[in-house]
Structures are given as C-alpha cells and as structure tokens.
Amino acid sequence: MPSHDALALLVLAPLLAACLTVLAPAAWRWLPVVGTLVALPVLLAILTPAVVGGGTLVLALAGHAAPLGIHLRADGLALLMLWLVALSGGAAAVAALRSHPPASPGGGYFWPLWLLLLAGLNALFVSADLFNVYVAIELVSLSAIALIAAGGQADALRAAMRYLLLAMLASLAYLLGVALLYAQHGSLDLYQLAAGVAQAGGGPAATPARAATLTALSLITVALLLKAAVFPLHMWLPQAHAQAPGPVSAVLSALVVKTGVYLLYRLWLWTAAGLDTAAVATLLGGLGAAAVVYGSLAALVQVQIKRVVAYSTVAQLGYLMLVFPLVGDPRAAPGAWMGAGCQLFAHGLAKAGMFLAAAALVHGMGSGRLDRLAGADKSQPISLFAFGLAGVSLMGLPPSGGFLAKWLLLEAAWMQRAWFWMAVLLLGSLLAAAYVYRVLAAAFVTPPAAAPGAAAPAQSSRGRPVPLSMSLPALLLAMASVAMGLWVEPLLEMLAIGPPPSVGPMPALGGRP
Image (cartoon, rainbow, N blue to C red; front, top):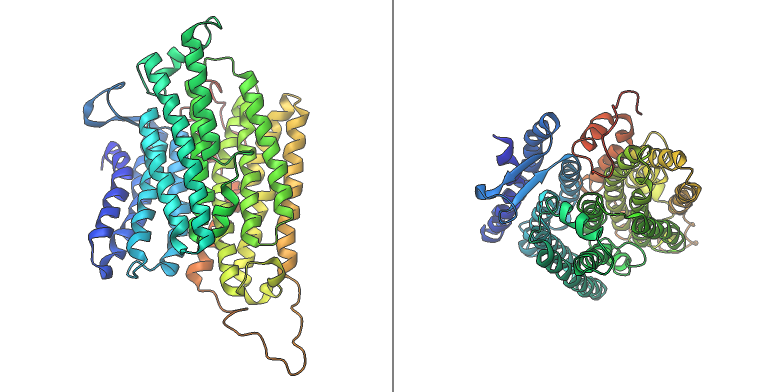
C-alpha cells in the first residue's frame, strides 16, 4: 500500500468503522472495533518508513493545493502522536471491551463514540490548516464529552456538562481567531501563514495588520490552553477524569489534553516562528511552572485515587510548556525540543497505564478512596505494580522515558543557566514521588482484622479478582513507558524529522542517551 494511502486511511478507517458499528447487528459490532484497533498499527507500520526515510510526507486531498485545498501532513512530531494514539488508545480499548462489551446495549453508542474519538485525534495530528484542525478538535471534544457521560451517574453528567460549556467557549475563541487570520492573510495553512504572520507581527505597532494578527494568535492560544487544561484553565479536568470510566480517563489524559499542547507547538514554533516571542514564551513557561507546583500539591491532598492521578495530569502537562522558554537559546533548543517530544510520548504511555491501573484497583477493592486500598498489595498485585511502574516514569527515575525527557529539559536549562526552570523540574519530580508514594503506602497497609464474631468483608466488594483484560493493558503501558528509556534512538530520530524552524537543524544523534 502506498504511504499516502496509509496516511489518508488513518483518518478514514476509524470514521468508516464508527458508521459500521452503528449499522451492524449487536452480535457483529466487535468486528469493526477490533478491525480498527488492528488496522491502525499496520497503517503506521507502512507510513513510518516513508517518513523516516523520506522526510515530511504531504498529501493534497483530491489534488488541490493550499490555500484552497486540504492538506494532510506527517512529520516526525505528527508520527510520534499517531503512534501514541495507536498504542495508548488501543490498550485502553482492550480494557474497555470488558467494561463496555460491543454487543451490550451501551456498546451501541460507546464504541461509535470511541472510534470517532480516534478518527478525530488522527485527523488533528495530520491536519495542516487551522480550519481542519477546528473540525478535528470539535470531533475530539464532543466524543470525549459523550464518553465521560457514558456511566450515566449524576456526577459524570455534571462533569461532562462543565467540560461541554468550557469547550464551547474555547471553540468560539478559536474560531474567531481563525476568522481574523483568514481575513488578514487569505490563508489558513499553518505553514503558509508563517511568512504573513512574521511580516505583520514585525510591522509598526499601530498597524491594523499587526493588531489583527496578534489578537488572533492570542485568542487561539487561550482556546488551546483551555482545551489542554493548562493551569489556571484546568477547572474542567479533575472532575471529568475522576468521573469518567477508567478507559475513558486513560485516553483523556494520554491523548485528548495533548491536542491543545500539540497545537500550541504548531502555532508558536512553526506558524509564529518569525515573531519575537520571548514574552509569550516566558508567559507560557510560567503557566507550566505554576501547573507543575499546583497540580502536584493538589494531588498530595486528594483522598480518591483517580483524583490523585487527575491532578497529576495537571502537573505533568506543565513540563510540556517549559519547552517554550527553553528553545530560545540556539544551543539548547534541539535538546529542549527532543525533551518535550519524549515527555509527550512517555507521559502518554505512563498516564494511560496509571489510569487503567487505578480503575482496576477501584474495581478490585470496591472503592477509590485511599484509606480503602489497604491490602491491595496482596489482592491486586498486577494492578498495583502497574501503578507503581507508571509512577517511576512520572517521577523521572532512570531508566524510564520520563527520566530521559526530564534529563533533556534539565540539560537545556543548564546550558542557558536557567536556574528557575531547573528548580521547577527538580521540585516537580520530588512532588511526583510524594504523591505516588502516598498511594503505594496506602495499598501496602495491612487491613485491620475483623472483630471476633464479625462478618468478613464480602468478596464482591473488597479484594475481588480483577480480570487480566483490565490489569494487563495497564501493565504493558507502564512497562513501555519504562522501556522507552532503553530504546529511545528511533524516537529521537523521529523528532529530528521536520523540526520547528525556531529550533533549527538537529544535531547528529550519535552518542545521545
């Protein structure tokens, strides 16, 4: 199969499968679901050699060139995110096959939404213009909101409604920014816009072109910060992650919130690369630093395991924002860029594994409260081990992928003598160790013995067995997040394909960790 066809099918296949899942009889719904989960890695196996060997791949749909035509574009960063969708989304889907069987009544709406979410994610990561990005991010948001409400509980519905209202506000701001850019520059192509944005943004301060361009970039940035739940615009995330079904929480944290950060990278490191963005970079880095500290401290005081993991997501997203101030120095920019890419991938694997492990622990122990996890080390060893192993990557302990990401970011900060960013990175790792240890310590407590004559806890509520279909995907993702640090050269080579103009040429990878 030609690589261009594989690129198009990464978007088209999940869309077709979602339609087939709606139309198929209940007994056959599993077929398009499983077929899509198998097809995505196969298509990526076809696409990856073409991008790695030939560089950025561009597909003009129907042969029409930009700015009127629709382009799909796969460079190293897009390829990295497509693999994250296939791996994290696939593992979470395996866990969801048990909790939401395709043949069940609920499976009739859960799985079409899941497949639409995958299609939207793939479309977003390969879209090359701002309007197609808008369509894709709306598909992702609406699918995610409906999946959060899949449980049907009142708290889940409230969390979904809060997410919906804030997502609509973000969408309006984003669309207004897109309209301003199109009116000013006559194009929405992310890469064609770069020249016009640089010319308008560098002009006299009083010109309408400069005002319209900077206003548009500001509106889009605020919208993406809200979509990504970057502090202080994170208010929808903890409740949504805590109330969603476990597999949905996994893809929310590993993939959905990454869309906003990914688009911020595209906007400021590609489209606005010709502007003087030092002030913006410092602001975005400051928001990231605040997120690291606030999210970690909030995770430390939670009493529910899923809320601990949810606030951990707020903290870990902060690391991804530190790349903006760190790419300002040409010497440090390549390392900072590779560190951010590694953090995107390592966090996606680790956090998806951690949420799946947390869901398995809640299922096995009958409660998500930390004080009800006593004895989980004996009754739920696989799930607890997966949780701890994912925590190794979040803490940044060697040889995990999280360690590699934080090391590269620390190295970039050291080269700039940026002591504040170094302190944030180190403090965040220490706080991550504290909240991960807090969960593990609660699980290793010996449960109190029942009083003489008292009935033993029911097997159905505490210490009940967890199916391998729930615990094994969590373990595999956690293991992958650690093994990533031992097999990282292909990942770094991928990130060197089509790097941002603001980063400059990437160095040879020989001798890198």
